[in-house]
Image 1 (spheres, one colour):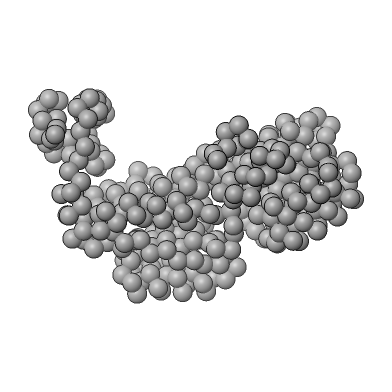
Image 2 (cartoon, rainbow, N blue to C red):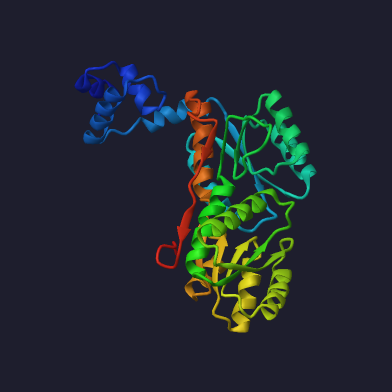
Length: 340
């Protein structure tokens, strides 16, 4: 088996330099790093997992993750559980809890539970709520390292924040909505109340892009409601009955199944674009049946991957993230490229 010593001898550098490249600790000239990585690849080098695992286990690390259970599109729990099982090989325990976006106290309680269980680092899907932000600041002052995903918060700094620029996401959606609707077509938006900040920012981006690039596309109506599949179903039936001219719908909420059910029952040929419901099996079925035409995703699994890897590198190798804020690009999914 190839060793770090052999790689160092081949490239003509110290073992410490090779180790820095392998563990992504930086401080190596780009051309030297390129030569080391080329040697690693050509020699099929793999690290001594057993030795590394033993050293990490001695640290008895515990990570925490606070999910949002109130929103079905955030179904990355299975993915995170698989990643957590990988961490177990290093003796790292991952504790997963749930909180409700409409109940700040549920976040406070979850953080208290993580603190009681000795968690050193936490990944959080928060909302821009003052009480939640204050609790996170308190946890940081007590030594807990925090990474946020899916939400970029005001007046809060942590190890790193990973999310999507929701306004720019809306601009992408606006372009797609204009394309599927067509010049002179009629569309509608089903969304949350304006108080839902992220949805409101997406909506702003959509309307701006439609105004700039597709001014002939008419907005027949904007339907606002809280997240509820039955309400989404009944309100959409009313919307379509009142506006027979509607040719496309952008679903900017999580009531995707209810809205699509109404469209299917009415037998209307309406092109549907939705946001970030890609994890739901029911949504995959709607894509297969041709009810949903486009899904724009903020790539939640990628955000979770970056967050978990960031905590791992920070506590295991002492590596600071290169950026305090990481923006993930949106992903456009249609029937042809949607994972089964």
